Length: 147
Image 1 (spheres, one colour):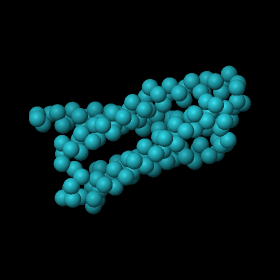
Image 2 (tube, helix red, strand yellow):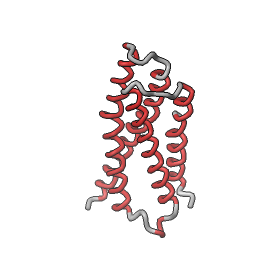
Image 3 (tube, rainbow, N blue to C red):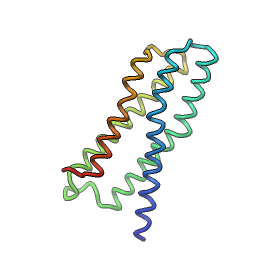
């Protein structure tokens, strides 16, 4: 297998991560504003469309590409074995947590869609921090490989 292929896949993986994270940082901001609107209003209906499109057409595909390419890169790079360090296992755990946050955002989007949201804007301001914290931890693990 040509060595350039690994670098091309790595670049595509990073592009997918950036797209996924852009959505993970933007969607809860939409929720903050959506939580401050009247259910059924024109503004609420606009937020519903924006949230759906962001999740369906950007976040979900970007997450899938990120995960698929991440697995391919791990296999190609021989990661996951004890001699590569513990950091990769911690990274995998953090990525799974990020997927869980993605699922939580999807759950909230469906609640908004059905006009069943019970959370206020302050809640969404708080959960907006989750992807940022996980992203910072993952990047430091990948760059520093501390253990």
